[in-house]
Length: 507
Image (tube, rainbow, N blue to C red; front, side):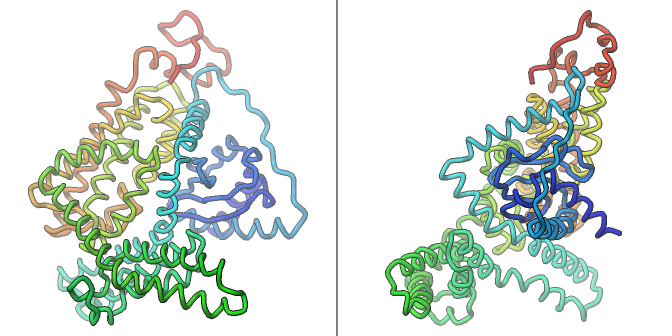
């Protein structure tokens, strides 16, 4: 039954993105179906966003359809199957939705259109070499998130069992299951890095494997013995990038007759030696510095650091700069077992939820926007914020700022407790909101950690709500937005307090 429902969702999406012939690539992350499209003009975005299972869309380097955690992993294989079937058969003409005659009042569709314009502008701004580089870094780490989540939850369960002294015969096995991936994460990073930068993935993985090989403990570099894992994911990333460039150089100069022997040998040998006698030490120092800096920041300026990080995270997401934090989170998890930054940043989502509830309360007569909020709020509580951001707060303008205020308050709360010695961390990256509870860890026991994080969410909700309710709208915005869209569609009288129909709010 579930498979047929997921196939139906995939079948509904396919014609609205131009059919199988318009698909150049299919992938997914934790919440989004990511499509490469030959011609984006063939996408019927309004009809796509109207599908019950679609929470929103993001027009970026790939066309991203937000389906939510769990759902996307089930829909993607069905979608890939339909694409293959469509390519094998005669290509069908893309479906075209009939034009809708919308109401004259400001509706959720109009806000979504403004959100699409903002996304397009953001995409244009993001097409810089630095931001494109950050996007490539994200492409390396995003495929690792499911394993990080699964192993993180198992580690949390194992820690709980150990603290309760339950199932002592099982906990060593759970520890092995939870730790195995993290012990070899450098190999996966190397594999993905080579793939992303145009090299042979297995060569990238082979060079990165040197970092976690136990035998490096017998090697001395820079006057000290190396240790297995030194340099971590940063070292693996650097080693694989170097291997990719060496491989490309070899492909240009090595004769084809001996290429299969010489190129992989030179690639692994040269990049391996540089990794052992250079990158492992340098990357190890950088990794240690990242951990020291993150801990110092929250230990000494916790409330202020949380205020800044929680308040600026939504704008960082809009600019695409949040991708720079992915290797930092992964490095902290590798070093300390959890990242202390993610729970602080997750407060931005709490501010967004509080903001959305306030918009719902203030716009009592705008059924269109209220319907959008009702459908997007459950995902927002689970940390999937795109539908609320792009469909509500960002195109409205002021509410986006007040959502950031809520995130700043929640971040300051978490940061304050870190400053007094109660660290709250996450054993994996990706989830936020309520979905982060199973991944929480800290230095004062699970109960304390959960209580602090839960209270932080509550602070974010409340401050985001209050800031938006009282400061999120101008008087003119309330007049223009707080209109019964169904009545407007039927040309009913203007709402009380107005003498003639008004133009939509300029938000």
